Image 1 (spheres, rainbow, N blue to C red):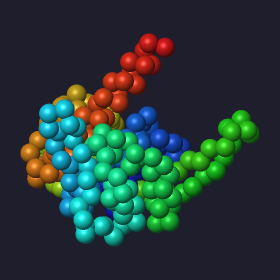
Image 2 (image 1 turned 30 degrees about the vertical axis):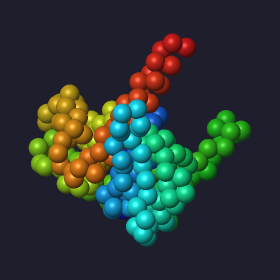
Image 3 (image 1 turned 120 degrees about the vertical axis):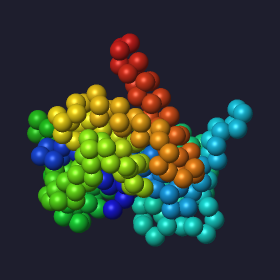
Image 4 (image 1 turned 180 degrees about the vertical axis):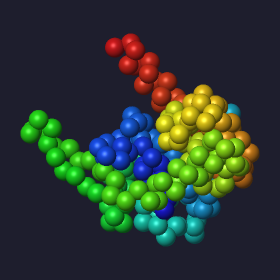
Length: 221
């Protein structure tokens, strides 16, 4: 399972099959970029002066997973500023990931029409076993104070970047504010190797900027 797949399962409403966050495209793109860096398939060259951080494919390191391979190929063809990579890699991704999760009988596809006119596809849960296991790992880290590992660290950082970490676990033992604080600490933490941390820093910065700009646009219209 990809980190992006775990993220998608967490932001999908299990019964309705609809997305519970407005920033899914960028967060999924960030998950793909992070996983490529973790595999050594992509490196993020840090910002230097006025030159922004850049995401570049590492020659000869094409991953086997089809979705990761497609992202790798796109960065091989054209290296991108990290902030653009986060957005571009996320385009159309939630549908592709959801379809794959349907093939594994984790989600089910539901095609319907709103008011009998407007087509909509939703992805309710078919089998929540894996998602529940992921939530259990997140509870251990966010609520019980366990150290994050190579998968839960990036996942929590991504959830924190869209202000969603407190929505995927039962916060009652410690409170939502404590879970939010813990998630932010993990997003800033030193659980990852430098290359991965550089990538995560870029992803979190992009998500923060997107959320701020969207909020400003909403409140001024």
